[in-house]
Structures are given as C-alpha cells and as structure tokens.
Image 1 (cartoon, helix red, strand yellow):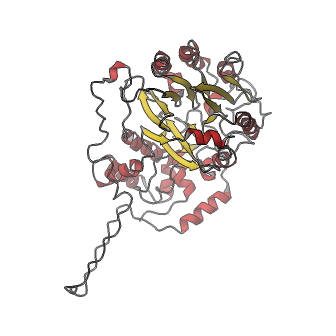
Image 2 (cartoon, rainbow, N blue to C red):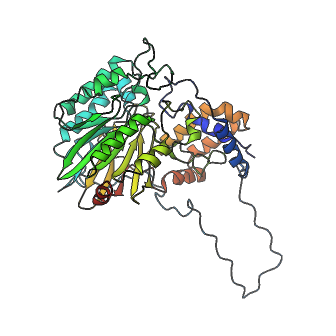
Image 3 (spheres, rainbow, N blue to C red):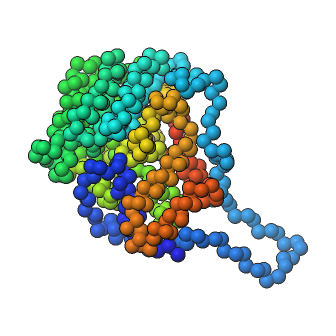
Length: 498
C-alpha cells in the first residue's frame, strides 16, 4: 500500500518546476500551519490506494440465477472509461490540404477572413532571452511580417520576459526582438513577471512598496521600466497609461468599431495596483477587456489517473497551499491571491472576458462564471521547460465577431507548425519526472521510495494501459488542448461593463 502523504509534501513537487529551472529560486516561504492542518485532515478522510492494485475478484455466486431473473444493469462508465478522444493514433495532424509548415504562413482554413482579427499572446520568453535569442527574434519578426495579412491588432506578453532581471544583455535581446513590432507601430503590452523585477544584486533592495526582501525583488524594477515602462510608450496613441509604480499598464485598441482594453497587471497584484486597474475599467465601461498577469493558474499534471496521493492537486487557480510550498510565496505584502483576484476584481467587472497567465510550464484553460453570469476564460500558456525554452510556440487568438467566437491557435515561428492537441504528452511525463526528482526526499519519508516511484513513471512512459489512462486523464476534457474555440458573446460582455 502507498503510505499516505500530507498534501503539502505532495505539492512540494513544484519546487523546481513551477517557475523555470529554479536557478534564481528565492528562499523558501513559510508554510502556514493552518493550511497543513486542513490539508492533513482532508487526506485523513481519503482511502489508501495501492500502486499495483487490481480489481477485486468477483465473488462466487451462491447459486445459479433463476432463468427469468433480470440481469444486473452495467455500472455507468467513469469519465476516463467513457472518453473516446484520440484513439491509439495520437497527435494526428489535421489535413490542411496543400499547405506546408515551411511556408511560414497559416493554413488557409485558419487565416482570418472578413471581420476576423488576431491578438497574439507571447508565453514566457525568459530562456530565449538567456540563451535562444534567434527564437525570440523569430516570434516578433513573424508577427510583424504578418500583421497586415492576418490583421494582428495586438500583442500581449504574460511576463518573465527575461531570465535574469539584472542582466542587461538579456534585456537587449528582448528589445531587439520587440523592435520588429515597434517599427510598424503595432500595439502591445507586457505583464511583469518574477524574473523581470530584479533591479540588480549590486544595489540595496528597495522595499518601500511593501515588497519582501528576498534578494530578487524591489520596487524600482529599473530594467523592466527602462525597456517596457511608461516613458517608452508615452507618445504611442494606443498606450493608455500605467499605475503609479509603472509596473502595471493598459492599452486601447478599436477594431471595426469594437473598443478593446488590454490590462497588464503586476504578478501577485498588490492592492494599490488593483485599485488603479479598477479605475481604468470604470473609466472604459463600454470596452471588451482582457487581463494579463504572470502567475494565476497552475497545472502540475497530477491527475486522477495517478495513484493516491499524487492525484490530489488538480489544475486551477493558485491556492493558499500551493503558494506556501515550493518557494511560491506571494511576492508583496499587499499581494492578493489568484482566488481573491478573480472574486473581488475579475468577477465584478463584467466586461473582462479572459485572463491570460504564464509562470508554470503548461497548456491549460478553464471557464469561471462572473457576477454577470458570463464565462470568464482563464488561460495558462508556458513552454519554458522545453529543451530550447519554448519551441517558438505562441498563441494566436482569432476573434470572429460575426460568430461570437475566439479560436485559440498554437503556432511555432521556428517550424511553422500548428500544435496538435495532445502533443504535449511526452513533455508532461518529463515534467512528472522533474517533479519526482525534486520531491523524492519527501516521498521517501512518506514511504514512496525511489524504486516504487520509478516503476510507476516507467509504466507511464511505456505504451500500455496506465499510459493510455494517464493520456486520457490529461486530454479527455479538452482543458489542455492546443487549439480550441471559445464562445464569446461580445455584446454581452460590453453591456455587462456598463
């Protein structure tokens, strides 16, 4: 039997994989004892589960059934058993006709038509800035070269633009890439991530804004503001302004008479930043709003296909417990959690249709209902743990106002490929392996020795029942798809904001 493991230990798997390779990891944040207690109490009520448990053998019947006895009804299939998405031939690409990825163009079926337009979303680019500058350049160059053809009207960055906030060479890589869209005047905005705020290790930390002295965060964020701050965009007609700190900003775009507002708020948004953002939305009640921040959702690929207790961390918004393990504490003394951000800000502003974030290597999305009864699409996209730091993948949001839809497309500017649903499976198994390496001391203490865990992961890596079950648990529901369509009643959001 697998020994039961306190949830805080199970979630310690995120210690190195939650936010890149951990090279700049901050000291461990204190763990709230109350959180531990509530988690342990919840787990005490859960049953033990054997790693290699087989279904119980059916008992021998006492007697043969009567000839006219009605058969027992079959049990309803579970969600994994009933899932028919992706049979044995996984990751099967769609037939795009004569289109070739090396063309550098989108398949004609995906290209915008009529009143359609695209908003591009850049996942974490930190590894590109650190060691893959050509990929960084390829992303912004492709956007610039195709902005007119595909009606790309805006570019949003989820944060962690660079890996080391005090490395001027990395900021130079980022600025050189952004020159492509600056030169054509394409509107854009950036959320500041944890790796972007380090003012420099040769200066005293400025904590006057309420920041913790963690040797990597200060109030000035000089390099971020010098390269992507309000002074740089002061003359841009689409730049709406920034918060007093300069760490949050908003941009305005109008497409075919539809006003769009893009809010980019600091990671773990401090209350003063959030109050400023609320004033921005209140001043633009008739605009469709999109919010970008850095840390909001997580997905550690710990699904119900894995044995207890590795199935106790379903993907979703960062919870109080997750903040408290793996050096994931809130960055500011006045920070709000993801739950509070949604409840007290996103849900109350009915014109916010989507929240984008990064920080955790994953493709995941969910829908939550706001106070106006409309779905808010919360979307996590980050590929930083791939071998080259992200594969050149970016997200293209194709707005179709006439159909009230937004189609989400994942496109690689290095290979020209359209990412296929399920293509991240092998990478997900690698992520599990990384988590195991980080958490093995805790797992050993709980009775899950290295040999047992390695046997489980070996079975997941090899074709067979467990691999198939784990695959379905990841992709059956569609929340980890690379291409999907969202129903967005544009007029309803705009009206709800008034």
